[in-house]
Amino acid sequence: MSDITATELDAQIRALVAQRAALLPSHPVEPPTDPAQLYRADNMLFHIRPAPDRPGLEMALFHPGLGWVSVVMSRAQIEDFQTEIGFALERLPKRLNPPPSTGDQTA
Image (cartoon, rainbow, N blue to C red):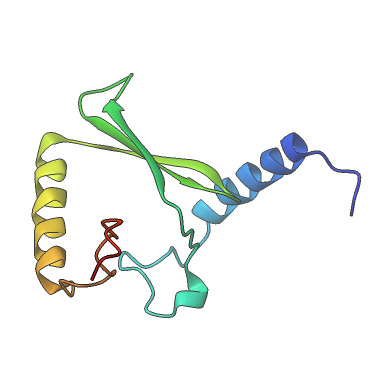
């Protein structure tokens, strides 16, 4: 391991992200289909609140390596987001996870 602290590494990651944002080609507007090209996390933590500095809602998602990543969305964007979640839920298998146990072992 190196002698770099978590705070120092976070600062370097932020600087690299800012540099990447300025480069061409930019990232595609659709997520990649290859899971290896996504930053993934299993236990999604999120926080939604009114944006502190402009009209809209701020939605923040937590990634264990990147920390909190947030986006501010207008009312129209939030409504579109809700609609897209509804469409995605319709395509999701109804029994993705087994039903929770009731604790009844008499069967």
